[in-house]
Image (tube, rainbow, N blue to C red; front, side, top):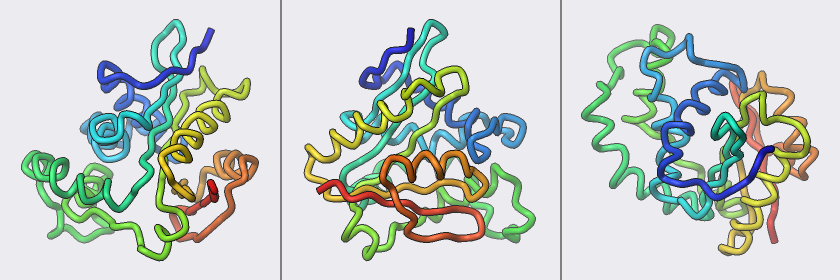
Length: 202
């Protein structure tokens, strides 16, 4: 049996692991990173710390196997990360700025994001101020569980006053793109490596 419940601080290690095991456009990225916690320090752990009311997990007999994480106010969340989350990580991971982007390892690319985090464009936030991340291991996929996670978070974001939500997905992850379209998201923009989707909540 798989249950959907609010995330707890004790789930942190599981969230870091799931983030890594889905970190290659939905596939296992364990072989790509020397530091197994690095990816999750950017895309999972800060939500559990600073937006715990918008963190939900799927748990089965083997433990937590999937999560959805988000925040209703992306701009405020990014301000919080700059103030309280990135500084200690910057002391832990050197800035690879001197290394040409094409020569950086996967770890160095993530370390660069820690030192030079992207800010979400204001024009995107005007219509879609919330954002989310969802990752499920294969064992908990199917059966409507991904949709249930999304519905739970979208309801929480709506109750918090968010009028719209956006997310990013790897350009190679066509299955996830189809999933988002099925849930009423539409494409907002595309780069060679990623696609941005949005959905209104009002």
